Amino acid sequence: MNIKSFEHIYLLGVGGIGMSALARYFVSQNKKVFGYDKVKSDITIHLEDEGVQISYIDDVDTIPEIFNVKNNSNQLVIYSSAITNNKIFSFFSNNSFKICKRAEALGLISKHYYTIAVAGTHGKTTTSVMLAHILKQASVNCTAFLGGISKNYNTNFLLSEESKYMVVEADEYDRSFLFLYPDIAIITSLDSDHLDIYENQNNFISSFQQFASQVKDDGCLIIEESIVDYFKTPKKGSLFTYSNLTKSDYYSSEIQKVDSHIKFNYNERMGNINNTNNKINLSMLGDHNISNALAAIAASSFLKIDNNKISDSLNTFCGIKRRFDIHHVSENKVYIDDYAHHPKEILVTIDAVKKFFKERNITVVFQPHLFSRTQDFAADFASSLSMADSLIILDIYPAREEPIEGVDSNMILNLCVNEDKQTCLKDNLISVLENKKIDVLLSLGAGDISDLVDPILKLIKA
Image (cartoon, rainbow, N blue to C red; front, side, top):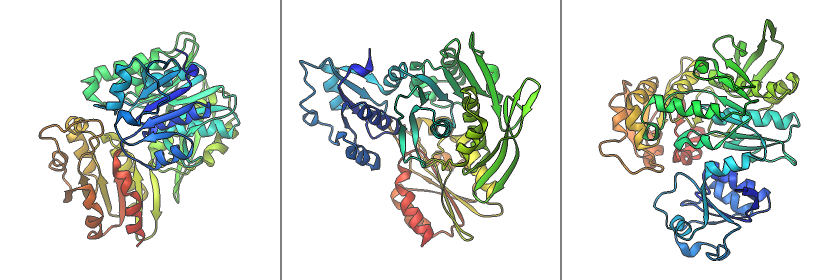
């Protein structure tokens, strides 16, 4: 299927971060783009301003007349995995429209580009956005589908005229990344997740190994050093490692934390030669973000981008919304928001805050994402969240799932050892925070906790 042959595109779940990037791509290709989403959001409002026609009612009567049952050969319907029990989807499915998942659409688009795909349980978004920023600043034409909003460009989709390269997140959920056959693949981590799909760690790792095997024969694998033994070098290609902890093909040194920046050198080890003359001043805290930067640096170096251009690009990198997003810093109060929703992500994020804001009291607000993830990793969540001085756990954000009997936020809270801990409904959080003494506040989660960022910031600044 040639995805460029379709003229009318309908996206179900168009307000999602991945789906909205697809919508922007099709708009850039002068296609007529329509969509459905349950909730109007900042993303859908911007899409409407960009020319996408969106319905917020799950009713077949809202489907534009242009989607004709009898003449639909140039019409494509793309749906998000979050869409379930949807009347509009049923209409398209029952009337022989061409339908595909978001991941399949990305795979079809990638066939027209030299594709760099970023996979891993953690770090996909940050690494992808860093890499796209380096390419753009180095005047390398690229199209990028990003899982977060770049602060440099205020968008999750980048387009350059006559793009040769495509940067894309390779999402492991539902084995979506197996639709990709990249020229370069980055794999950042292999911590178990989505056990509702994979059942166990072995199946999870096997899926990543399958993804890695789909790198083109003359392509390149870039692997975080601690997991490299799981993977094989492409037949005629290359394999490079990176690490923030040990010497590898790309590694960091001379790390300093200055104000809200991290300064470090990145080093290239090629044979017996070390190139260490590369200084970075990164505006994102956390050792994990140094690791993400090293992955982006490794891919850029493989693409023959000059070291000075790599350094200059990362020095102008402004970060990503909801990725260690520092909203307020003063002597009295600090507020940071982050998308962390897996126990390992929570662990490294809280650890980064504790290292940078030493001797200060840290209040964590966490919104669990998915009933199944809560059930599978309750003990791990509790271990990570117990690092907080004060803890508030919101009700579970269900996303695509129905409730599971006996699974709620107390499942985590009861395992936490914090002296100051409680659960709280999302709608009651601001009133709870009004009655707490806040020093450093960290909000975490991948659900609609993002709706609370502005109200929290207003409270912090009051």
